[in-house]
Length: 201
Ligand SMILES: C[S@@+](CC[C@H](N)C(=O)[O-])C[C@H]1O[C@@H](n2cnc3c(N)ncnc32)[C@H](O)[C@@H]1O
Image 1 (cartoon, rainbow, N blue to C red):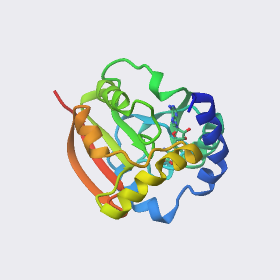
Image 2 (image 1 turned 135 degrees about the vertical axis):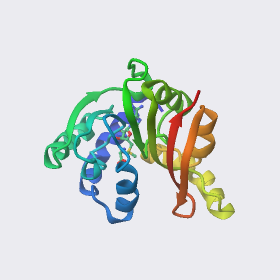
Image 3 (image 1 turned 90 degrees about the vertical axis):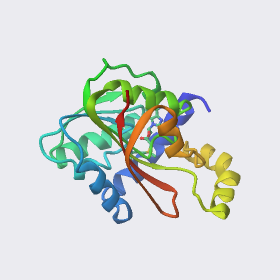
């Protein structure tokens, strides 16, 4: 699917993501992840700012997304939750930052969307300070045989509808790109991957 079509799909979902900020089913996971955020933070594919209620004070967030409608919602949310944030409307797959620019890099529910997620993870590693951390909450393929078969069957349809792939193994993706996993948990029948990682090497 071309980029313009994907942006349109996510623009259309901005209202829904705005309403679902603070969603009880995700709150504990987002809160648990975001409490590790420190210093200069890069949040990739920020959406409508679903993580903004959970940022600790004193972080400075650079937030990027290619959907203008999502960013409109995220800007309002940043003011509401007093998050010190600046915003970039950009394709994450073409973003450029200097090496070691950020203390924390965050991605929630976005590695499912990229054409080249491996490359995005490698960029996270490059942009993160050597003693920094990468915090991920991603959905992907389940360990459950029946559920994963269903995910594989429905994936082409779901991708056309939502712009997300449902069959990625996020643990393998992250390790394959060279990140060192510090902590991993799986939830929601192992479809949700909660990962804290460090750049390795
Ligand atoms: C499923 S939403 C998740 C939003 C948010 N991170 C959250 O946790 O609710 C995926 C987000 O990724 C953004 N996105 C997908 N592909 C992108 C790309 N290549 N460049 C920039 N943003 C992208 C979409 O616009 C959307 O806001």
